[in-house]
Length: 272
Image (cartoon, rainbow, N blue to C red):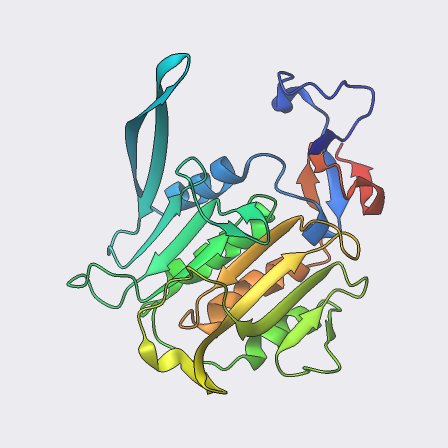
């Protein structure tokens, strides 16, 4: 649930968000997406020159009251070279990460002759739009979006520059915010995370385990996740580093609507 920044206004979803006063908010990883994750990312992609396509389809369900039509839409943004794309999939019955539905899926391939993505990254609602935008900007600037140049250290260094702490038990694979409310970790990817390279599987015991970066925010120990993000094993570390750098940035972000679960943990100043 989200709460308006100014408690003078009622929590009425019909109230126009654009009419609310704006505030500078920190820390960024607990600030939510302002309820505008679709528009913020889509506007950034449009600015990069990516083409957008919208597919609308209907599904007919039946119940004791009769049948009804359910319309769903999928918005797909494609880069000019067709090597990378981003899909808004919240309305399309997405799978879940950390108990939250996936909102954006970003993918890339090495050449246009393949219909399959080499790797994919997934973001649920609540992920700060600034972090996804920086990830996409880094992706757009890559001449070879599927080539691994750097190791995982670049991701941890990006977060450490902004004060995040390395995990004492996994100093080369995990970092966290000093308040322990957010974490970046290189580990086993969740189910349904797509990656085309079988070499990313790492032998562990009797099985094969794919290792990729995961990130999430947990406002309090044992509380539901505020957001989650998952990067398949072949996502270049430098792209994850761009996400990590923005996510961990100490610069405040502009917000009008806050997550209810974190508003007591945020610092807010009027944007005047």
